[in-house]
Length: 232
Image (cartoon, rainbow, N blue to C red; front, side):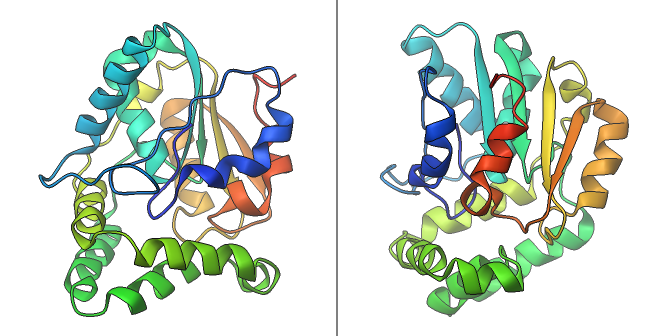
């Protein structure tokens, strides 16, 4: 299970009651949570290769993969060379296609803004992940996310933004994945529902829509669990 940009493994805690009986592996992105920072830039495929090395080191041959946002980008890259290891792939508020030109402009603006206004950037970036209603309901979660993000090394944040901006499209690879599931937020402004619907025309994955913003793993964990094929 792999979280998203500015996230950490504890964000999966709401799903734990629904995953009893499974052996769970929680992975954190470089510089996120308790994961060490990386001085050198990396690509999304670099992260996928590191995960493959980890999976092989613990003797896991086949597994169900779940990724939220940036975590889904990494699992999509993983599928490029290792799709035979995936029993299923669940992309939560995520896609396998590359950034649109508009999204790349947003990333570039973030890179220019974050050096001077790191704290302001964290508040804005995390606030944009939630709907207006969610902001009033989940104030504690948002506060914790902002506080953890402010502790991150700025280099780690920049590396993650660049990796997301420069990733290629993996739609062809995803079309070969068995049991491909998309869980989308009806009000997600980061990865809009329409974009996921367009991608599914290429990948032929299953789509489940939740009335939420981008952070469904913390705002609607029960609905996510209900739509995961491997949970019976």
